[in-house]
Amino acid sequence: MLSQTPTQHHFLGADVAKETITFHCPAQGKTQTIRNQARSLRAYFNKHTNQALVLEATGGYEAKAIELALSLGMTVYRVNPYRVRSFMRASGQFAKTDELDAQALATFAAQHHNNLRPFKQPSDNEKKLCQLTRRRDELIVMRTQEKNRLQAPDNQNLQSDIKKHVRFLEKQVQEIEEQIITLVQQDDALTHKKEVLTDVAGVDDVTATNLLAALPEIGTLDGKGIASLAGLAPFAKDSGTKTGRRRTGRGRTNVRRILFMAALSASRYNAQIKEFYNRLIKNGKKPMVALIAVARKLLVILNAKVRDALLQKLVQQS
Image 1 (cartoon, rainbow, N blue to C red):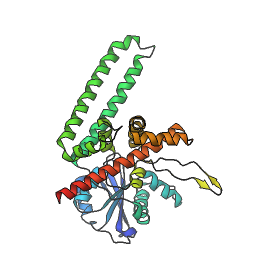
Image 2: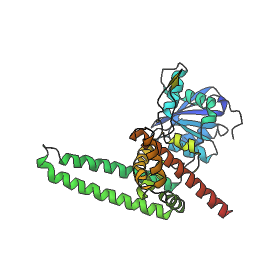
Image 3: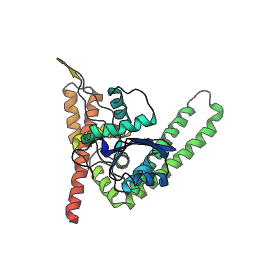
Image 4: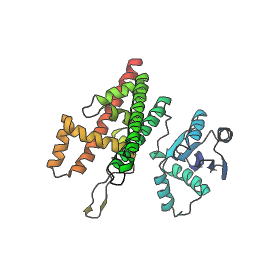
């Protein structure tokens, strides 16, 4: 458990690669590289259970370290690589090595601890849902690419082969979607959240399952926190007497894409959202700006509904 005023000595910086992980322990002033394997990681963590682990998202290579650290009762922070790199540059550090990155992670966490959220391990079904929805999206992209090739003028002799592949991909997408439906139906928590989400006009089953997979934190943060996580919180850009345009970004790209499509639907079929969108347009906002605002408002509404439903469920169980 961290103290109320943590210092750099409370954090263990970890730069993760496919085969190895480089750790920096400020408390000992040591940097060490070990194999990214369960046995080596467990032995190392057993010596540092009183510290919090800080690492970046690295495409899944960090998963083993996170799982082991949490199983030993350590606090884990998985931070945005862009933020850490910006921190290094602001500190005058432009060189990049595994050792320097591990040191920077520990220092970054010590100085920005109040703005970091401990990592919460998703359930097995949440992991499966994320994998299935990601695979479905990949297959849909491939299917679109093949359909585009059908229109190419120099592919006349390949039409049969391309059509065959399109049919195969369509079958694969259908099978993945059936697995997603079955998975959600077999998980009471996911089913409950999905029902809450789809109760909002403009949010269909696909949008709900995609959102649950890409944003498992929904219902656990406040409105500003969830909007920031999704990259939909507006950032000011003012200087002197000049007031710049507010911009969004830096959050999860896949979440913004999901919510943008939901915003298009909600701005037409959800009375509350439609009124909000029309008011923005009437006040001179460009359609794209208005849709981004709609996506943010929709997310805040969905987050509040899931939060209230979870609280109600806890009250009923107590």
